[in-house]
Amino acid sequence: MAQTHTGKLQKILTIFLCFWVAFFEGFDLQAPGIAAKGIAATFGLDQVQMGYVFSLGVFGMLFGAFFGGRIADYLGQKKVLMLSIGIFGIFMSLTAIAPSVEVLYAARFFTGLGLGAAMPTMISVVGDEATEANRGKLNSLMYCGLPVGAIFVAGLAILLPEIQWQTLFLIGGLTPLALIPCMAFILKDKPKMAAVVQMPTESVPGMAQVLFKNQQYKNTLPLWVGFFFTLMINYILISWLPNLLMEQGLSKQEAFSIMLIFQVGAVIGTLGLGYLLDRLKLWQMAVIIYSGLFVALSLLFTTTSIPMLVLAGVMGGIFSTGGQSILYGISPIFYSGAGKVTGVGSAISLGRLGAMTGPLLTGKILALGLGTTGILVASLPAVVISAVAVTALSRYKSAHK
Image (tube, rainbow, N blue to C red):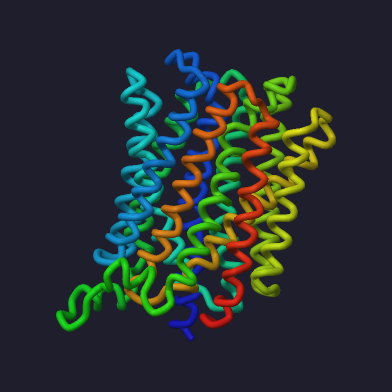
């Protein structure tokens, strides 16, 4: 009985720690969007250069997710998660005191590198604690930390409109360093990870074997496509929405309020869709998520009515961030054993590539003078492609139960 109680406590503390890792990712994702005008003014950046500020962090996440996942399969999840948070915290703090635009770009890249390595490792840790019956619930409890972190930043910007952008980055960089000793004490590496390293008769499977062999490509390719286009849309909204709303004539406070509403929707979507994931087929989830996202984008980029923007903001949060959390929740299902973090990390890397593409594409569209109509035309096909890809995964999900 005592052992069972200890196991439950271990699971609760593990999910709690992963929630805080997700919280600081949300903090970092939202902070550049909130601080965009301040950063642009400090360094004299135009819209295209701001696209680089948004995307370099995501570029770092791409490498972090891909190689961090692979390293975690060798060294163990615990060490990689602690190292990742250390890198993230140090370089996010450096962003605040960057003396030049080159140092700013480098700091954003390495901040992303740390976060990128943390996410697949964290998802795998939660996946190890989950069963088919509670996978959606545990994943949503962990992942809702991301929109909560973003809400915290947006709330700070509304409550303290005069807060310096550098202060935001110092708060977001120094605070997560306190998680590292907690991780050292609470997290446990799974025996299977140690066994793979120690036993000479076994080895970590090659990347191609994990991702493509034995019909595995039927899981990997749709997962990659779903991640790429869903995160592309999500990061366009997270990075550019406040600026786009101000371009449409909203005040700074109104734009930040819509962004806050977007992140409240993200919490609702993460928890609500996680609940549904345990009860519905994946193709049904795809219909709900991508139909809702299609409507939300259409409203966000075509109206200036505040009540309609509030509705669109809530829907955008529910279906873009909530949909993203569902992809994170299902990705560990399709990989097993020593290659699990590699498989999850590869999917997240493709997602990060989409997340990097979205803000850059938006910056180019705006520089060409095409405005929100151009962004809408670029976004809606991505929603349809994601829906098809995630629907295709539905037939394979049941085989992994």
